[in-house]
Length: 58
Image (cartoon, rainbow, N blue to C red):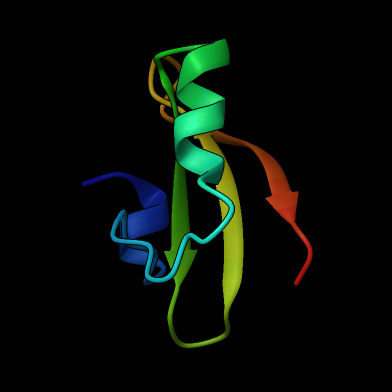
């Protein structure tokens, strides 16, 4: 379990109407989204480094 999962983030993103994760993975297959349902925070994660590379403002 990575530190982001311990802080409440999960990989399941609901209502990705802009298909952000698909666009990220077309650029780099190791990128994915995580979100925290408690506070609505979204982050772009790098699967190779297992860390956040960008926070997405909402």
